[in-house]
Image (cartoon, rainbow, N blue to C red):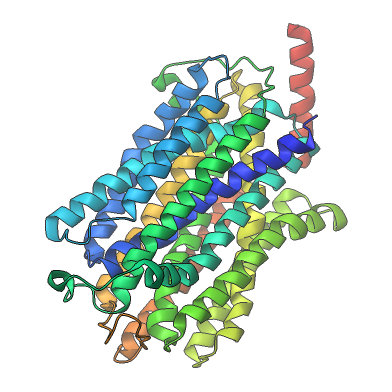
Amino acid sequence: MLTVKEKLSYGLGAVGKDMVYMLSASYILYYFQDILGVSAAAMGVILLIARVFDAFNDPIMGVIVAKTKTRWGKFRPWLLIGTLTNAVILYLMFAAPPALDGAGLVAYAAVTYIMWGVTYTMMDIPYWSMIPAFTSGGKEREGLTTLARSAAGVGSAIISIATMIVVPLLGKMFVGAVPQELASRYPGQQWIELNGFKYFTLGVAVLFLLFTVIMCMAVKEKSSVNMKTASVKDMFKALVQNDQAMTVVFTIVVINIALYITSNLVIYFFKYDLGGADWNAGYALFNMVGGGTQILAMMLLYPFLRNALKLNNIKIFYVSISMSIFGYVALLAMATVGVNDVVPFLIPGVLVMASAGVNNVIITVFLANTVDYGDLKNGRRDESVIFSMQTFVVKLASGVSAFIASIALCVLNLKQGAGEGITSNIDFSLGVATSSKLGLRLVMTVIPIVVLIFGALIFKAKFILHDEKVAEIASELKKRHSEDA
């Protein structure tokens, strides 16, 4: 059994890991497009190409992890290496030289973002691969998964809540006068945000590294499973043969595309649609409530549905998807009828983020269970391969959603306006066409609804790992392993 110290340390690692991921997933488009002026179309292409590159990088990293044998284990060396390199790249990505422009700036965005994805994979795959490798199925695995996902939600929530509050504060604290040669490019609020993101990212990178070091010192690898190694071809074959893993992978893509479309565009919704000189405060409140809801959903709502209401994980999944769809419908309805106060929008925010929190736990449990399914069906425990696909598809979803958001921003022609002074607060919604606002609302609600419904239908038709089936698989594996011994 895992100790309390090990559980808490493992959760702390998730906090730092998802702080980094949320900062990149939610603000990379805003940073390069709205602040630095890179065209939304160029950013969309960069984000999509990076995800295609990950299609080759992530499974290969899974193979490397599976083959690693050191005195410190197979997971912890890569956790440390990946975290250190990713922290450095993260800082460089949000510290672009302000004098860069044109092709140079596009190249800088492309190189740093692709390298960020590579280094994130180096630590994310071994992190999640540890779950099925040192836990048994059932309560212990679900408990650790719930804890890790809850901690990851805390990390995501910290970034969602703090970023657009702390970035302007740090920008005003450390920024000097805009250099004369850059004054026309970075007027007012843009110069503040440009510098604020650099210092904010530095703090996040340091915490990320610290949390991972603490985790690696406290968590000892206990896996008794001798993971077999194979060629990349064999690994892909094993994954394709695991139909349940492929179903869960598809579901992860669908859920995250819907969520990331909204998370990429909601900052533009507050800035250019709801508007107001204090739009930052409304955006921060929305994220604070949504982030808190996501954490509570993982820590309280999922256990309540699972233990108190005795719902199986598949039923909980459908409840969660329904909550998200209702949230999107409510958000669109409120925006359409002209609600301009942030408080009513907290209701759809709570529904969508509660769904995201529950799904974070369920999907990881589903994926971990497919490892046992693959072991029984194919005679292989491909933890790293299957969990490398989780990393890839989540990043694929972020790339696809960012591409969709980028195309929307190009068509809608939303961009930051010039401020009068370095500390000026501006209502950026003034002058934005009504058609642009309507288009923004439709993209961030209707497309996610359609994607979620489609995904739920595919999941219903293909997924078979209900609770009874998981227990049956665990029993069969136990019997097989006892016979082999």
